[in-house]
Image 1 (cartoon, rainbow, N blue to C red):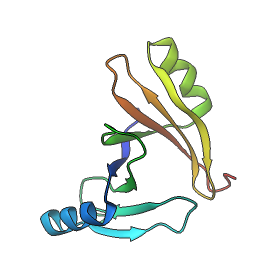
Image 2 (image 1 turned 90 degrees about the horizontal axis):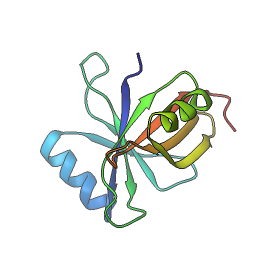
Image 3 (image 1 turned 30 degrees about the horizontal axis):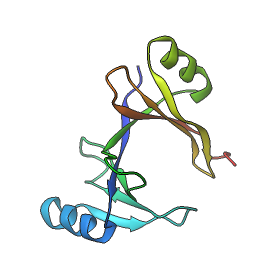
Length: 122
């Protein structure tokens, strides 16, 4: 069974958003050294239930929080998603040194991600 492993919060002002979540929930933010404007969010100790996430600059009006589901293979899941009424809204992409991701939409219009762990991704 595949589970939600990550969330992403879009923000018009990432500094303001990170301050809000840090002040309210005590979350920790660290700027990612990767190729995009992205902050990793630690929501608690690794031994506690819950997931960590990310914060990114909002890229389109109306974009909302996205949950990402861990899968064994993005390539195998994309056809299953479309066969069941979903759509691929951002095709498979490499996150160098981390893995592969794609973004999809369910039949209700909700956007979600699928992610395949692969440290060899280029």
